[in-house]
Amino acid sequence: MLIVGPPGAGKGTQAVFIAQSLGIPAVSTGDIFRDNIKNETPLGLQVKAITSTGAYVPDELTNEIIADRLSQADAANGFLLDGYPRTTGQVAFLDEWLAGHGARIDAVVQLTADTDHVVERLLKRAAEQGRADDTEDVIRHRLDVYEEQTAPLVDVFGQRGVLVTVDGLGTIDEVAERIHEGLEARGIRRPGSDSANAA
Image (cartoon, rainbow, N blue to C red; front, top):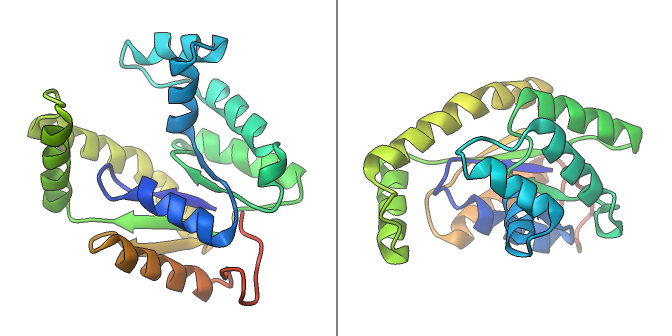
């Protein structure tokens, strides 16, 4: 299972809730990168050198990291990916990796949010966390880049019929309930009901 959504839509928060309720790990590429950078692992130093220039981590490196993480025992019965795949090349790699393990993508949760609301939320967060670089222009550019990069992926998953589009505005509980209603419509239920594996 995947979750996609613009910066500030609450994707990270919802990913944790979904994963906990379904009993699967939430796998965030951002968290993996940050942990490695913080611990100054060989991977972390490599990633830091790339991201410090403003460049994206290459698909090959990201794919390798994801394949390693999904090979771990806790992901055997399903997982939720947050922040991956970001390119059509990564989608192709993930499809091939899953097919080689007898699995497939069952659902892609897409959180949508009004741009002005997201900008307001991110500006507030920037002020609270002292992120002086997060100006309105910078935030709007990030949102434009997200739309540009994600639109082709959303089209791919929409054509496959696995897209679950959810309004990301509202309280955390309201959005979580909308997500679970959308997943249940696809046969993916929380443990305690007729449980289905989620990948």
